[in-house]
Length: 202
Image (cartoon, rainbow, N blue to C red):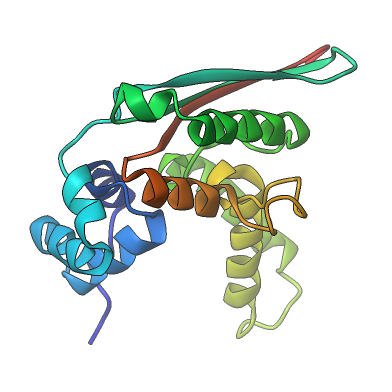
């Protein structure tokens, strides 16, 4: 049986409805063969009442945090949203936003928040480059090489795919794992809405 192709927009919609992680949403949509309501059901069964609380709720509260590097040459503003003002004032929530800002300051390669945001043009441009780089390799292994390089590129440019720079403190977790953990702990839809990184001379 072939696995249905799930669009990035469907994954994004399911994430907004449930607050579940990207891979969880993608898997649920594949199991549900693209049926949004069934995918929500699958996630509710898996994640219990956490999803029930989050379904159909928009993350309209939140916090804006900043990080300025000690040398005064790099600064970051980040907006992280949740469902209620109560959680927006929660120390763990604010700390998460600060840790994300610090990470972005140290990670100049982050261009997109999630894979949903990666444009087809950007992805195709990278694929073309990787295909040319692998042109001297045998035909049978070329697609695997390109696929591997695209995956590595996504780890570099997608914020949620990156491992937090402070690996010891955060046990080598990715930003998405940290976000999902906080979402589970607070029972709310935690969303990194946007960020801006300023660097002197750039």
